[in-house]
Image (cartoon, rainbow, N blue to C red; front, side, top):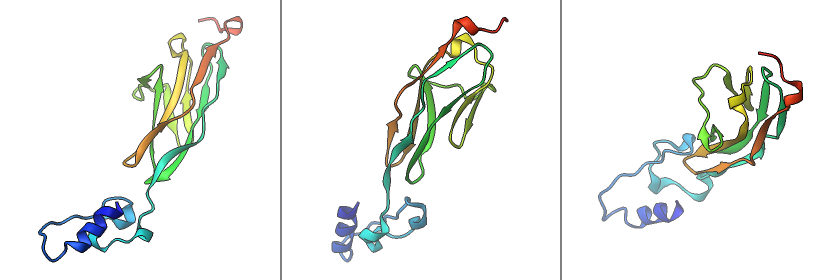
Length: 140
């Protein structure tokens, strides 16, 4: 980003264009030509706590932890077997530090990963498996 700022500063009197900062949020609207290196704190997302494998029985609640950091703060998205988790299903609840699954069903078994996304990039967590302990299954 500093290469662009430097170019804008060097060409300021002869060029006709406008560029403003959008991230980080405290810099929003500031002309890029006025930004210095100390102003830029953008950091790629990084997973700080990965989800772990869990052994569950049908009907149980399961919680997968996922914590991430970055600047701007990354959005967390959950995937199961490389497909987006259906967050419209009321059994799935995203929390500030993970994913809660209420009343586990056989179709919920699989590999879960969280993805941290921001304008600076995206990163996936280590995979975590939800494995049913069939010897303890609740009768349906």
